[in-house]
Image (cartoon, one colour):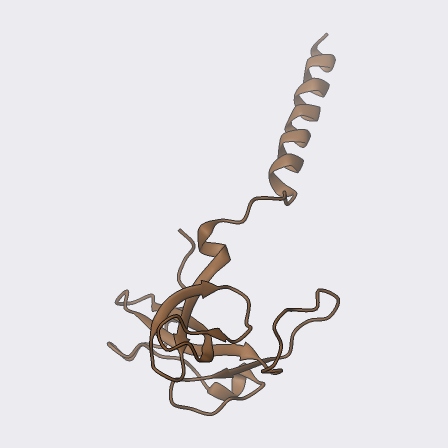
Length: 138
């Protein structure tokens, strides 16, 4: 009798672990579906689609809004724009799910580059600490 209970408990534990570990449809949160964007033409900041496709700015109407990546200082807590991201193909209006997108990155006021490493190390603009990372999920 004791072994049967142990087997049932183990099977239930495995089933619960699999249920929690496997991705499910409809589990995209609001934070995952929208990300900060900045218009390169007028500087307007707003939340837009999370994909790296260049979109139209709701303020000026120009197709110049790119995704802004924010980092947070682990020492002082300051949040700042670390870099911007967009597709290498500026004319793209949708992503091809069969191949990874080619991305370009740049710091504000810098040049677009295909390598994130070429942007150099990031540091906090407030305390100059190099202990910076993307914000922790909430």
